[in-house]
Amino acid sequence: MFSSVLSPKGTKKIGFWFKIVVFVGLLAYIGYVLGQQRFDWSVVQHQLEGVHYPERWAVLLVLLTPINWGLESLKWQILLKRVEKTSYWEAFQGVLAGLSLGFALPAQLGDTAGRVLSIRTSARAEDIGASLVSGGMQFYVALVFGTLACSHHMTTAAARYNLACLIRLILLVGLSVLGVLFGLVRRKVVGWLATRLSLRRFAGYWNVAGQYDDWEISRALVAAALRYLVFSGQFYVAMQLVGVELPLGVSTSGIGVVFLAKTITPAFNLLSDLGVREAASLWVFEPFGVPAPVLITATLTLWVANILLPVLIGLIWVWRLKWSVR
Image 1 (spheres, helix red, strand yellow):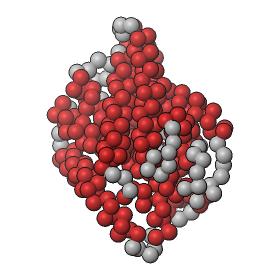
Image 2: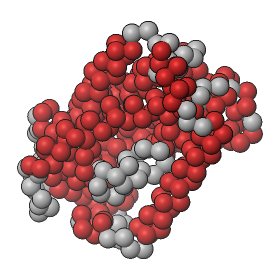
Image 3: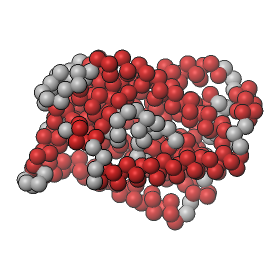
Image 4: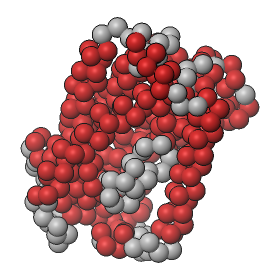
């Protein structure tokens, strides 16, 4: 299964080149904005000099990182228990192993492979299904919070209150409502898919989605929502660390829009979400006059604390994985 996903044929080739085009576009946009303002380290240094107790913000940023990934591990454990019993520590190891493998393998394959291969089980299909449900939940939480953030962002940035943004907001609201409806009829949808002969061979991956009860779904969604609030808080802390002081409403809604853009934009191998958050931040906070070099510094600081450090730690468990899919 893993080898077939890795083969860049057919639609996978299209997806690969689509990601390349998007990635080049993001780099071009970042380069354009930096070309307009020029990345002047003196601007960053001047900003840092005005920050009171920067070491406190730095410590807080790092301390929130294990809480962030700890909540993700809790969500993974809750969903995995439907398939098999696992400890929180095993779930935590799997999450970090998946985060590390996500740097080397395409799309979400690395994250799924790290989680599944860290489990001693023969029910690979069900484990993969649980991993997909976990990712889908986090996506939906980001969608809902991002929709609320977009609506507020349009009221704080006059330049964003236009027809195109209104249409995007309507689409986001519609997708959020569809998510609720899908949750209510998920068992019927899974049952209908099982009747399709052309799709029956994949049934092992999605059957688990119809097995969760409302209590399990609720607990996992709460964990996903808390995790969203934590890593959004980390972004706010990173902005405070480099001296970006905006009204709380402007900061929180802007952060929500940035994470929404990051969520719906394809991930890139090796770079993870690096580049997406930077480009989105430059666009979102441009109306408020935040210097581009300062924003880039904040987002890169967040990436190092929240992604790079956990990836390096996760390599410990990647080394111990048993590479078998049977």
